[in-house]
Length: 303
Length: 290
Image (cartoon, rainbow over all chains, first blue to last red; front, side, top):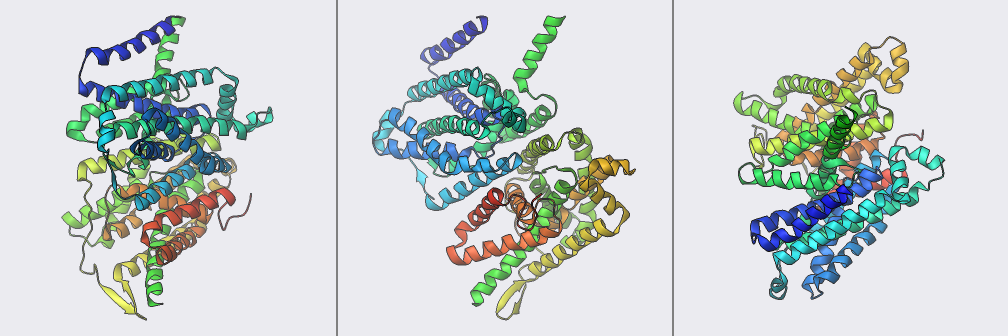
């Protein structure tokens, strides 16, 4: 109950703040936080819950962005284009994603990385140009709209992941993560649950891609396919807490703020810091920052 | 025909380099099941080390190996003692996953640190023999290309002899076959893992030299890791003998694809080959099913 109240309070705060504080810089930050938490949650569903570490989520992010941009610029309104982008990511996943479950364990990780690179190179070759917003669409471009859209998708994602984590499907996924052979032995259809996990994950990634394409005015077509979009969600989810509901959001907040803090004079130093923290987390804190908090709370209780 | 031979010769030269790139990764993976994806970043750092050695100390790139290789042995030693030894006792699947994640972090750290320290500019070591070629049957082969093929053959053969003919090499092979049993036979398995990891990192020196003679920047580390993984899979995981073969195969496939569909899809063809091998023959082209 207490937790639900806190969550509701935070939600009200992030809804009201942009209406009170008319600050573009703040909008941008909050949109980025939403974008990265959605993307990190997308990775989290597959990597955190189901244990299938993907190094190629940029594939689905990029597919969402590409479809959204194309539909939006050809006159479809953004609230239709956004789910369409997500759907295109899912379709792409069913073509190239599901077969990649033939690759087990670490092969899946490097296989998805290879797929992401194939797509990056292909898009670079086929669409070498810059994507920019046309005049008609520019009228629709409004930071507040984008913010509420990103927030809406973000909250929906979080609720979906929360529901998933409490459902039978979520339990099946966790059991695959913990021991795939044992899960199979007790009668869980591992392939089926991996496919479900990847479907949800890629849908969310497609939404994130659509929001990127809505938010980012002008960019090269290949930018949403860049490797960074695969690596960042992995770092964020791990540091925040992989396999938790709040972890990716906490990670995204820290990631974006660190990025802003150093962007002006040191460029990519946030990735450097995140890399170091990431290694520490992998070695010592399997539940990330969220795990530290629960540990702390538990030790207080026992005392 | 002359064009095809020309392209193929580049394929062989690149292929030898790919073999060298994958060598250290393959050694480490074979001995202790660590998937060290930071290997590409280590090669990139080795290229910088060679570059600075040539720039400040006026060394020849091939001479600078004497200095760079021991340095990287020490770096490998430190990396193992600081990080990788912590997961040595994990069971196989967990070990691969955790080493992949840790080295992935290292890859990000090194490539970003290199960008911050030395900018993302393209660099290259220029020597007296840079750009010189010999003509053979109408095919122009650069001196550096010949040198890198020779270097690859020497290094891979040397590693092979080290592993098969020396006492310590035999200990390494024993550990890679059965860690536990090797321990019962009185081999200090942790020491063997430590030395072979450091050796694997030191092996980054040789591709580092070759790449320093071409052009490189910090971003190249991702590409190199990628190539190393492709060769590792083509060769059959953990097979050192297959590394040269796998590298040459990749080089040849890339060369042929350049000839057929143009250089734009060079990377894609190698990656597609990789994905198909991963899916249908995960034990590698040369490996046997276990």
